[in-house]
Length: 241
Image 1 (tube, rainbow, N blue to C red):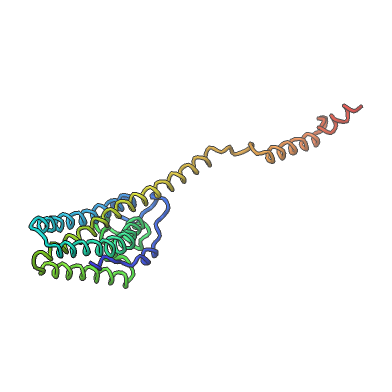
Image 2 (image 1 turned 180 degrees about the horizontal axis):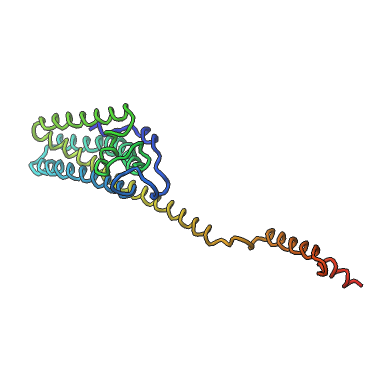
């Protein structure tokens, strides 16, 4: 399951735009809609694996475990929960997927929305090293599945249970980080909208003391230049006389 550990540094190659509006390079939906689609597909993959592996682990536990087997089960859950659930999924894989999901609108070429989940996990549309690393990860996962299937009872159920816990951790991290990114994105859009409203509602002239003073000076100078019309200086002189 170490194949889940994708390099998070590759997510900096394409920064998501601050506002989910405007022209997009994604065919079939907005950037937010595509990000939702990516999270749904990736989350459904996690849920299917958790259900399948968890059911086998529960059957193993119901069949009975010895003290040493329970101890190994606890150690396996702790190790995979930390190494895969926290370090690989929460800290690397999930941020990578969410950032690429929201950065679909700055991709170099148009991408079909149906292929967005594959793009999000870097199976295409990234640097050659990143794509190669993603395919190697898929191969390692497939090899790990074959190895675990060959394990005898109850070891297969123990490993499946530990993997199910790690995937559950990753699924929770996916949901939390997606909601956080979505709220930040919507919040930035609200700020832009409020700023536009303030600019539109601002009066074009007046309202500023300096502007008002300049307007009054210009009016006074115009009156002084008109013959037969006393300016402010003339009116002040007549008042003194």
